[in-house]
Image (cartoon, rainbow, N blue to C red; front, top):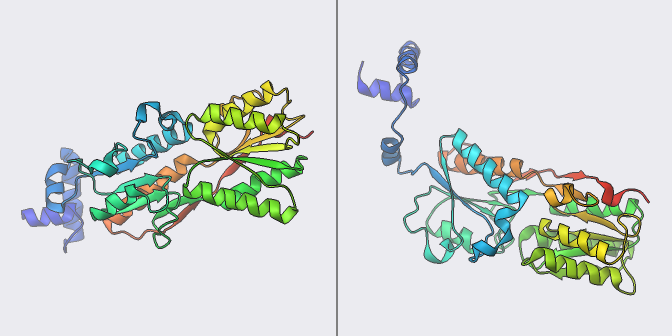
Length: 321
């Protein structure tokens, strides 16, 4: 039996008699043979690694992103999914957009929370590497390789829930960011209040420091002349600050004000009271993004874009009054 025949049988190439292919598979299993990934990579031109780029600022030590539930779960499941396919996953540094990959060999990348015409996407494209985004890059309407949640539907679901629970006005704490899901959520909020003839109360909040910024913004809302009946905080990093502001302002949750979050997290689940929040299922988004990227690399059929349906976790902060 020739080396070529064995190679074709192992790699599912060429024409090999089914009985011969089965005999080779039995011998391989008995010997515990595993292909040399380094040699295979040299032949295919692939490194066997994919890159993950989170929305971390250059000052990574002081950025909350690396401690937030959503990104921790997304990164861990992305790694596990890659490992299942015998691929490595590299968490790439934010300075990559300025310095380039600097010898970090990756076959493609996953960019999380892109801004319009995101430089991280541009970097990978300029290197002729396939790129998948988690949420849409609104500056690239033709790019369909992304995994996302339905931001507009998510926003309306939370707002409808707050209205059903008795809120006659809703303020939104929106991150000062041009990320796609933030832009879409704010647009959906504005459309929702306009349809009902309600006042528009969008409060831009700095992402760093998220908790203190949300505390200051929420306290101003609750101690003003016309406090809203509900506050919808879009970002997970705003949850703790909003709850603290309600206590300081002497507002009972939910008796005086309803609170809800756009991203579920430990602060929402363990808050006092626990806060109603949207579970965006980062584990499903991560799995879909890795599988989409590996499909592009392998040349297998890929359905894109892919959407993950969020789940509203109703908790005590929006209990019926």
